[in-house]
Image (cartoon, rainbow, N blue to C red):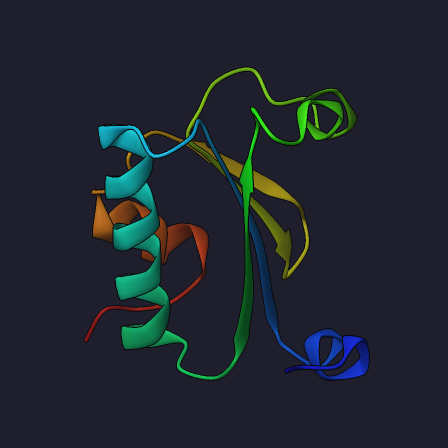
Length: 99
């Protein structure tokens, strides 16, 4: 299990807001995990938040649709709404060149 200090050392920090295990939520989870493992390896933290189980976080993070990826680090904070299937768009948001 990772400690809080270990998570803070990661360059990339994400929160993925989903609605249960719907088709779009499942697809978004798989897509972001695949991209992160392929391009960021051990340099990221990903928290998956089910808005049905954590409705207070919807208001706190101003989530208007799901799935939504909240990119907290590196700053500035960015959001991406959808199933996260557009790999090039995601890599551009991450400031990663696809070579």
